[in-house]
Length: 299
Image 1: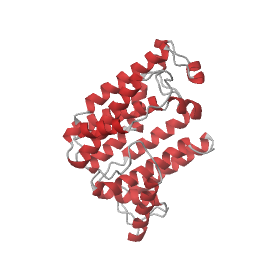
Image 2: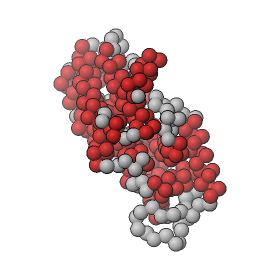
Image 3: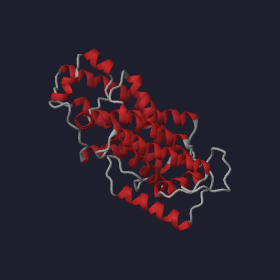
Image 4: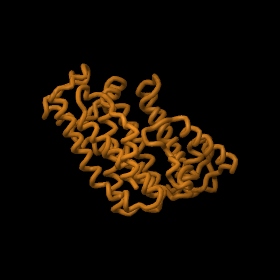
């Protein structure tokens, strides 16, 4: 990194010394990353307004690579934390108006400046990824929601800022939707999280309440106790999602439709989880009929 001597150290993003070609190449790098990854709900979907696709691809590239530092590869914990710490330093460089020799952050600095995005939300995401390195268990549902505050809620808030729709009520409902989607993701990935990373995101207090222990996770025991545990988590997620659901109408246009599609998708997955029989550790799959139902409901 090289310092821009003309920058005032105000702690707010300043114009960085990057050429137009550097910025263009940086955006292309981020968009290529989006095209090379698959998610349940496509990132920068064609449904979104065209003006949002480019900044969303940059935010995705930032979050995707930071998430990989926490979970992927064979690095030890110290190396993972060091890499995440470097991302925090890049964010600080954006705040100070320094030039950065890293494509994701060249594009991110441009997005933050153009859309006046709160830099703290990106630091919050790093906080979540840092927790992923060391935190493997959660005491109760409030502990889970606190994790979601850093891991999921910043994304929804950033999207509302991009849409110039970041009112206090919209932000509150967005937090509920994002937290619900995060918990739903945990419920779909129970086996993967435990096998690959030895993580249990379900609250320890609820495990004790329903008589579930870690042997259930090791042997994938799908008994009545585990079924009751899942039903409780489904109830938590549904309550959050229904509280946040009016946001889909409060935000109009194509972004509002995309938001309603995600909300209805989350509610549909909860229904599938609720009706699941046999292997409670299996991941529900949305069928073409489910997608049609979601599409119609979202209209």
